[in-house]
Length: 131
Image (cartoon, rainbow, N blue to C red; front, side, top):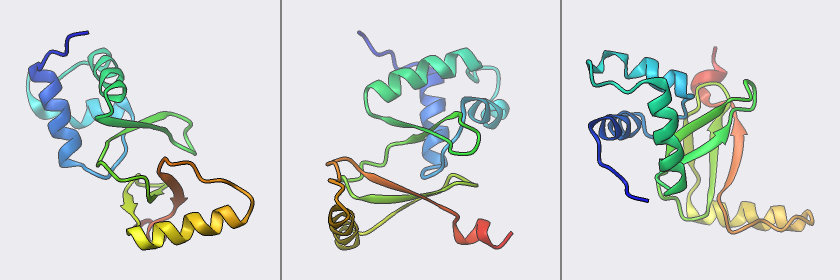
């Protein structure tokens, strides 16, 4: 299937790149891009583009624990380590390689075999923990 480099696709990737490390629902993305002018993509266009971007690995799709809605973030190319995502603001923090190795080792001691995929821990970050 051909991938078209449309203005709306570029705007969407620019928005996600500007907010790297944060997860958004489609509605939040559309609202955030609302001030981008008349070429801002509609909600249905964002859904279609997100499906394409998830399929090609550019964007990661998760489910928000509290709202149970799909959230999307630009895939930062982590190398199958450990990351932490704040359940309130959606910020993502990557754990360094050595710490990731130790966490995976501890998980395996509990009888769980960690996959080669990234392990994501749901946390409350310092910024949100103070509120």
